[in-house]
Length: 331
Ligand code: NAP
Image (cartoon, rainbow, N blue to C red):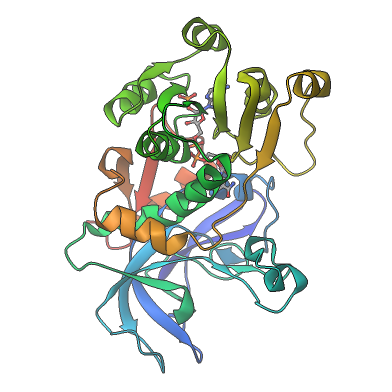
């Protein structure tokens, strides 16, 4: 089969590999859709810890073609929760499964979904409806991560929520904040993403800090950083209202330092939280996508083949692109 392997930092290729065989408690799926995430680009650039020679792709879904000894029906469409917690370490025992010291993430530590076929633990499969658009399954994982961050931020009815960064994570955060009954402002630089933000429910969409201040001079009750760049992390607490909260979802490169002003955060008692992965949120995400509560259709910018995927991951996303979806059996 064809698959996209990250050999080492800066070396990614589409190559021939054997179709994997499921071990006990694993299933084999024929991949229908796999999203290229900001984290895949971080992995390529060595900005996020990776394991050499693994097939990338951690946002994916497909059809079960070999259910091994598990009771998942062959032919079912499933989404994969890529994070496989050990259940035994002290963090798992405390229920903090996303902090598991032995987490084996599909598409990072074990082979993932940028391939024609993929195996993963049956316990990590969530069944999707037969009638769903097959591309939508690729959005369950990013929604699950966004749900965790938004649970942490706990936006409530009538509050103001500033979402920074109009990628998939930010555009899902916008929708979740609207579902919570908040007034929502999206800060993202490109006019295309601002327009998309307004289309999917944001009350306002702007491109600069000063425009945010023109709308909410005292700042937002909740600021959700979804851009993953140091400038916006620095900015996030400055745009929170006194007594407000900040949730950082964006990934800043390992080792990178970001200036923040503790005096401002202390004097105005800003709470800053960091949200990592998708503890216990994948099933909820799958349900919200399956029943249309979250609209993912406008987030699909293009579909590409496995042959095109290596270049797409190693290049910056084209202007205005939200999500490129790799479709292994692309025409
Ligand atoms: P993305 O597609 O790169 O989206 C981020 C967006 O931020 C960009 O589209 C860009 O849009 C905007 N941006 C960049 N610089 C900006 C600036 N200075 N001011 C305002 N907006 C700016 O990434 P994504 O897939 O949505 O993911 C977002 C981040 O979350 C990434 O860092 C990713 O690694 C991380 N992530 C974290 C978790 C977790 O568990 N915490 C899970 C998944 C992903 P414009 O060009 O319009 O500005």
